[in-house]
Amino acid sequence: MILGFDAKRAYRNRTGLGNYSRVLLQALAHLVSKAENEAHQLHLYGPKPDSELLRSFQHADFQHHHPEKWLHQLFPAFWRSSVLTKQLQSDGIQLYHGLSAELPWGISKSGIKSVVTVHDLIFLRYPENYTWFDRRMYTYKLERAVDEADHIVATSHFTAQDLVELLRVNPQKISVHYQDCQPAFKHISSQQSDNTSLVHLGLNRPFLLVVGTIEKRKNGLRLAKAFQKALEMEHIDLVFVGKATAFTELIKQVKFSANAHARIKILENLPFYLLPELYRNCLFHVYVSEYEGFGIPILEALNAGKTSLTSAVGCFSEVGGEAVHYCDAFQVDSIAQGLHDLYLNESFRFSLEARTFEQAAKFSSDLLAVQTCDLYRRLLSA
Image 1 (cartoon, rainbow, N blue to C red):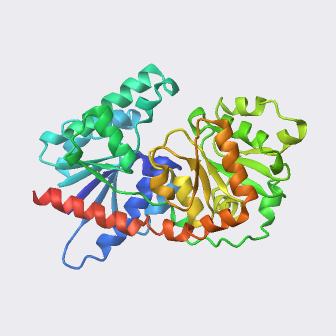
Image 2: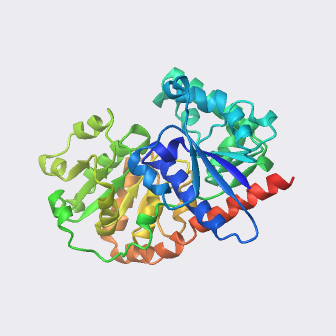
Image 3: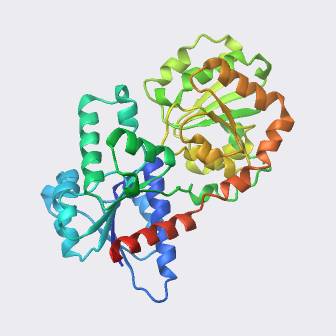
């Protein structure tokens, strides 16, 4: 198979979509390297990569393609959408996979099979979080991609349902392939360590961990109010780790007592190598987002042997299964009760932790690669 991939996110994005792209590409490279009776080529298409992220691809036989003409370098989005199909044909690509809900124009008429991965439809469910232009652009790109694609991969059944409900996509055209987290989070021991880095971060007391961009949809404001209600938790901290936004100030402005305010910490620009350590040392993880396409922090916590308090609706039960605790993320009192349940009832928390590694094992990059390769073969043989 001669395969092409949209590598924009893999090259440039250090979080969600970039991590998905890198994990899948590395797993595919490992899988095809073991194929004895088949010859495969993996071609990556995107702008010049971040030098640090490029290291992710140094140990695999990828062929990298970047815009060469000065106009395409100046407008890489134009190159990816309008020019790329002709280059794919010139390179002999048999199947192209858009890893982040986009496909180049005209690919359905090019003779090249295509797959597109859709992670979520947040901009349709939460339009108020986007500008008018961004909503229109994202909607146009997604509608065209799902129409042109030979097949669609959704990262959860919840996203697949959204595609059917919001875009009227034929369910037969969709496969659900669960993603995996980065290798750095795999096989993390749940045993706490006395890492002095945590002390330098001001984490010298037991803490709850919240990971993700600090934005309205992530529900940090309700969580902060619920934490304020949980009076028995006065000796622990609530630690947010993620990129701050204008919404972060609303969390800071919640009227806590002086003592409670000091117990809420926001860590920005945290070095990545410290994140597994935070998961390993937290009491439990909290992820009460209103909407996600998958919920990768829950999986990261599971690999650390930690349970999560998370939302009872959406995709979250697909990831957490019976190893996490659920609440109504739209009700402050329900979140506060969930915090009480996990903090005060240690036997209950430990019973959930006992299931974490078994649940985490259900999400495998090796399985993802096998499912994806099988899909490619079916499409190419059709």
